[in-house]
Length: 131
Image (cartoon, rainbow, N blue to C red):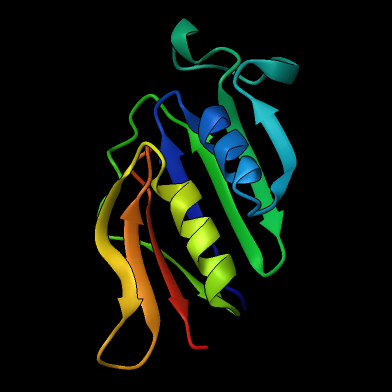
């Protein structure tokens, strides 16, 4: 058994996945679109939007799609366990571009170099570096 997150967007899934690729998190390995291959669509607005995507990188796997009834992101966060502070700083800065830092990167009382950011697509990320 393995747990993976599934992110739901309304119409910004492809842009979000391109952003995560630019951040160096990985790449899209599967992409299906609403309306392709005779797949029915809920509305014309959804035609060509992401029906299902698989995103993979080193130690990363999640799925995502555009849905006409998607709710805003809430109550969940991706936590990335990092190996070094330089890489943590670099990735945190990229994810924060256009987003909102809710906990600046700093050594926390439990000893980790940790920070939390909500990216420009409303997805929360926690970066935790033990070194």
